[in-house]
Length: 95
Image (cartoon, rainbow, N blue to C red; front, side, top):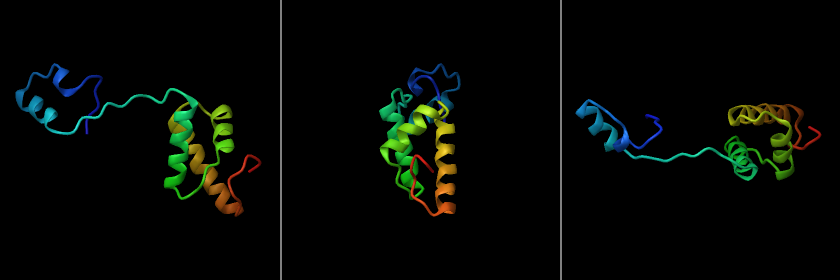
């Protein structure tokens, strides 16, 4: 896996063998999540993978009061998952 700011064909790679290998695989264009709806969908997906349901109101609460970086938001979901399991409660704003 490699990450770059341009597609493999647009990179200024000097070694022909490396350039060939970079263009061989699948290329994905990844863009940052820019609005709260996309960030909420990412949090809900992360929660779903962990086997929990993240209600919209709880997700929006986390987005507006939690850290801005997506990695930190995902860690918050992990912490909340553990807290809800230990308290044997569903994920709610009061929890």
